[in-house]
Amino acid sequence: MKKILTVAAIGALLAVSGCGKSENASGPVKREAGNWKTDVKLVKFEVPGMPAEMKDGMAKMMEGASGMDQCFTQEQVDKEDIASELAKGPGNGGECKWSKKDIAGGKIDIAGTCTANGQTVDMTMAGTMEAKKTDVTITTKGKVPTGGDMEMVMQMTSSHTGPCKAPAAT
Image (cartoon, rainbow, N blue to C red):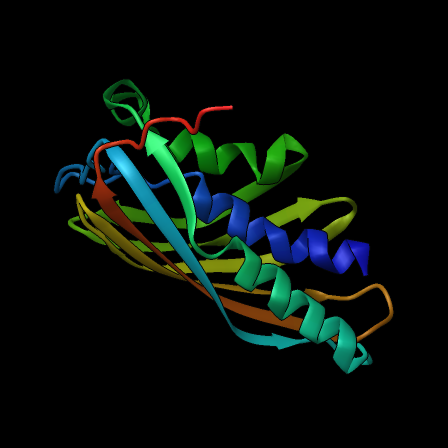
């Protein structure tokens, strides 16, 4: 189960890392500095032989990631580089090789293979990217250790909600 969740988290980690600069000549779409809210929806999660309660747990984990707020300063936005983020792989513990990295003109179209914790998955990311909103569907497919094919589809939507919020008093 832990390995399956690690593989599933690959897509989430890459998407949350942010999409900033273009790899294409049509020019970069830069995210606007400020507070961003990210919502995650598990569209499909199929793992052969996985008990229903584990699938429900995965769905709940994804729902728990929804509503996450992140503050991005102007300096962070200026330094964003999607190409280097994608090259790092998930959580710096894996590696991804991309066969397609088209991040330009407000569109995201990425495909490749990622390896983490001894598992390899095929991943695609497709969607839109604007200064104040991103909407990306991430599809991850691979073999599970128990045999058979795993497929997960997530939709991640991030929206600019205004200036960064002041930190809560402790």
